View 1 (cartoon, rainbow, N blue to C red):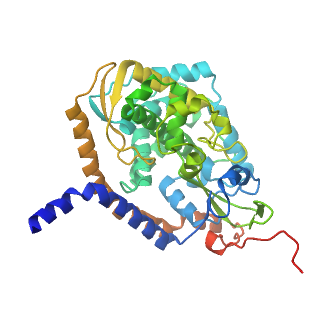
View 2 (view 1 turned 135 degrees about the vertical axis):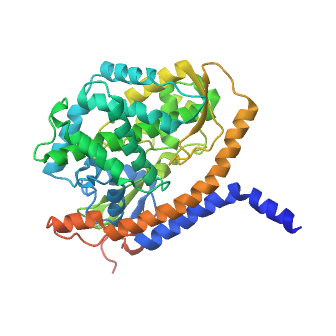
View 3 (view 1 turned 180 degrees about the vertical axis):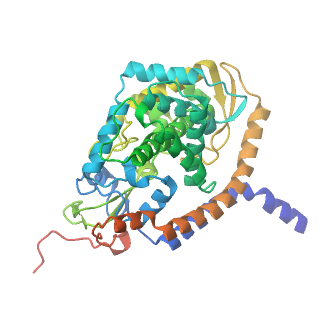
Length: 448
């Protein structure tokens, strides 16, 4: 009886342990960082007010005044103080954003041709991790966007090592290896005179290298690798969707697996949500993309590209690249063009098959079986992928628990963002406000 109970307990680990570990990680995160932020959508801001609050000019603060910023600066260092996504509004942000737009404003035909060339050089083995397969492709793509020449192997390896280290740390699957990141910074410092467009004015050469690294060879490479891995993973797990419109497949993939989890903003002034509720200045607003993308859809947990046949993405709860009024993703135009070209080229030559789990953060990196186009996998091969992924999730969850908790603590200890603003002499913001201590202001006249 004891042996049988032990076998049942061990055999059931993949079904309950990963979920328990996630809950424990969230509890530890809250214990270390405190309860910070007003969830949106949530009790104070319903789904129908999400866009209104997100687009409010006062929802413009990005880093200063939020404990969450210390964690993101930690993961994105070095150079988080120059990263476009983390700069506060002002002249420096405007100049950096203009420089980024110059690099990304390529004609559609050029973007498509470049993406197809990079995809044509991908020759996957039979068993792959999709994110690992995609990362060298996007390293080459963005190298050519920046330098207007084909990426040499040594530069590609530096970019991939840096991007993989960033995203692995973000997932809690590994610690930071700053030597990998510093090597890319040093390389970029030697190439500043070779870029195709002027770099942001007012930055030192090292700061310009960190700008390139953070914008293009951290965020752009990581996000496009994750995006293309999710699209191919969705096709691999839902073979019937391979006959659907690729545009609808991409829209549905981004609906279920948005690249942004929670985007936080710090309010610079009060924001009136409605006649009764005001979010005070200094509030940390946590915009939850997955929750917003699932609201208002039938069967929100199902992958169904067909739902977009009668629905316009512009009119749905669907903002995969953010909102134009509040720091949208600078690659909002280039990214979908390049993704369509890459996925079309790869699926023309190969078929993708998987029974592994697909979650928004994709910590398993997308285990997949790749066969020649039209070939079908054996049931045994798909069963192997499923069983292996479930058991890997047990070990991976424990790694994330230990390493993720350590990095949350270490980021809190180092306080990179807080110390940066203290050193720059910026005035201290009002204490950040969370949902537990927000007062719902009544704008109605007082009663008799």
